Length: 85
Image (cartoon, rainbow, N blue to C red):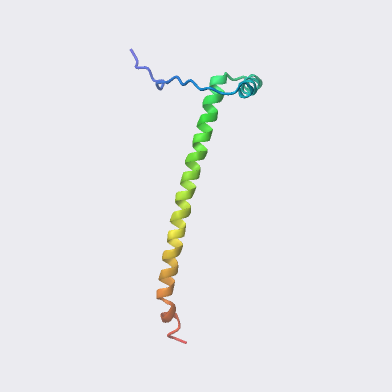
């Protein structure tokens, strides 16, 4: 007998406005998806955007630190560059 290969799922109860529920129902019907599928995809997309933003912020900080280090190194060589003039 093969083990169950599907990931475990958890149930989540969320309260939303009637307007949001109506809009969600219309969109899910127009896309031919279940409401739960559309909600799950929306959550996944939002979490990816949050992770991407965190990553971009870390990269920005790293580039700024590198730029400061490069400036310091170039300042160390300022006088050496003018020795041969």
